[in-house]
Image 1 (tube, rainbow, N blue to C red):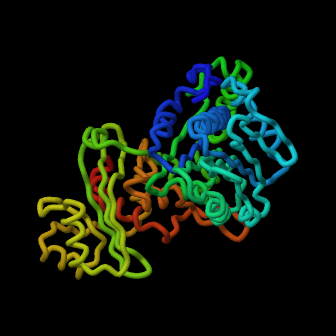
Image 2 (spheres, rainbow, N blue to C red):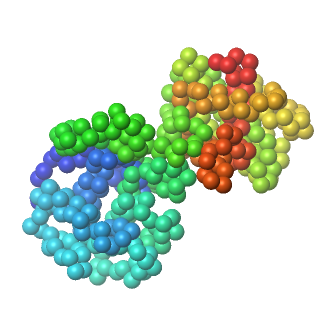
Length: 415
């Protein structure tokens, strides 16, 4: 690496990104998703990593996209200039505005800036030598959907070494937004990282920034959580406001308490959905940490999956939807299946109980379907957009399985 980099990285990278930096340096991931609130320093982090990566690999160039081209100069172009200067490499880069590029003089490597107003234009992107080792989509939520991203990536990342794609954004308020849904998916080679201003040295942000954040926290907590903490707070019509989607360790699960299993039967188009969760009555906290979902799966095939893949034994109780044939079949195969107790109002009672818990934690890597359902489950609205006080009977198979799993807890004890 060039001697131009003399500045200690601890003075440029916020502590919340130290682990991500080590992963990038080790080449562990092809995609880095950086989501967070205002002032989280994620854009600064990406800009530093791109320059460092180019200095390590003399064949690697970088290309940076925003949705609209006329936003580039005052955002990512200025951000890359900051990173280059902060790393002591300012004199080594040629600066151009037409076309908008930064060129590393010793090797000819480039940092190219493009708008994605027409993703198809990326097909003509070529370098005289080397390859695009770094691709950055800044303000990802500006893009129309995943198809735009796929088109650009297919055109830009070709051959060469191992390319890294960065995605940086403030999560949209609605869980149904395509960016939030995509971030929940478990994809090989993808790291999703969340950060907020609390992980940034106070002196980097300044007292006026801190004061503004605290003022919004006191005046409107929901707006504060979305704006400064980067949380998906919903549109106001979500049923569950106590859900936290994050990775959960085996040790955390073991420390919670009782383990429960639930099963919602289905065939097609409705799936069969099995769930495993842990509940602590003392803390009123629920962790959903394992699931299985499939369509057109017979009872014997389900039995084989649960026992061979999920480790369910004859001693484990599974509380199920009241479908007698499937319960009878699974019992005959050796599973301890019990029909959930139902009655008038039992659905509403179970959902209200789940709403009243202090926290529902869902591991989106282990349970992507449950995470999606709980985060996106919203009250119905009438034709004027007014919320209707009833729970919709759709897209709720994991929710039903969780209700069944805890059926005896909320129905008989209310703990």
